[in-house]
Length: 111
Image (tube, rainbow, N blue to C red):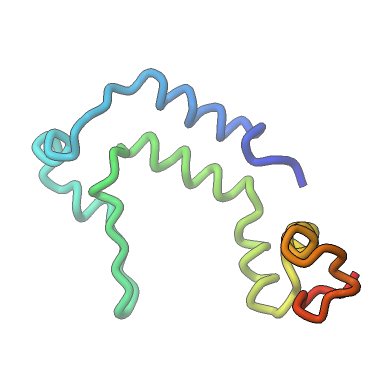
């Protein structure tokens, strides 16, 4: 899997950030009275409000595109099916914290 920071979608977000003014959230709400409805999601008792972040519809589309190309859905399904994720990272952390992870009882990963 390639790094997300080298993807076209990431580059689009970087370019947009470079050309954007640093709009204040208050200004974004005054320009779009429906902002809270556009940039919030509710599912049961979970409510996520993105409206208080400096994004617009174009940025949101870039973010959705980035999620699709980053294989996040597959990663999520793997996580909930019990598959171990980021095994190399776990090994790095165990090595940093405990020395050789194969000799450490405190490290959950056996290499």
